[in-house]
Image 1 (cartoon, rainbow, N blue to C red):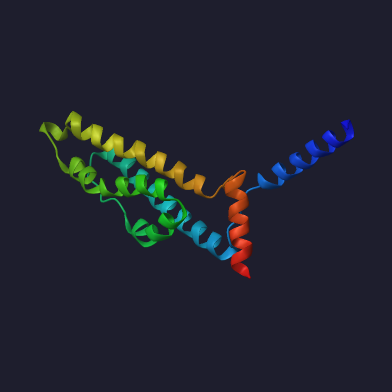
Image 2 (image 1 turned 30 degrees about the horizontal axis):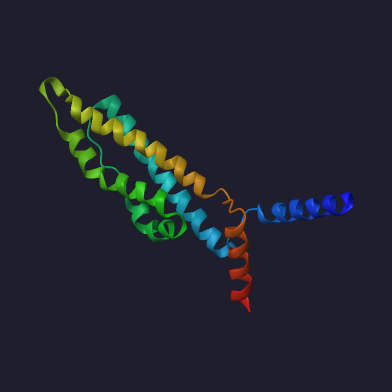
Amino acid sequence: MRFLVTALVAVVAAILGWLSRPLRSAPRDRAEVVAAVEAVDRELAANLELTSMFDQTKQAVVLENGAFARYRETLERTNGPATASLTALYERIPDTETAMERRGPANSIRTEDRATIEGWEGDARAGQRSLRAMLEPSRAIGWPALSARLRGRLARR
């Protein structure tokens, strides 16, 4: 009886170990996502560099948004919640640029404009982290992993 219980526990542990392995996407889809994440990540890095130049020179800059517009659909297909925050970030670019252009006496910047610019910078850094997290394999455990694997296997037939 003890042997039977031990064997049953070993079988359950093996099944759970098999179910907990990460689900992998198709190589073509993975390459498309990697290209999208890299392009938007580079664009955010360039925008952060531009805002740091603004901090030093107080000269307004024009932030880039072409890569996100190009790869938005790919990112939405991959990870909706992270893309929603990036969409909100890119929608705030005009407000941030306007805040950079407004000047007070002696080229000073109002407190609320500085808060807008610095808030955008912080959210851009958070956006970069969420983008990079998209490249990590997802861990679907238990029933979701099993059903995804079965759906994939049955769809191939």
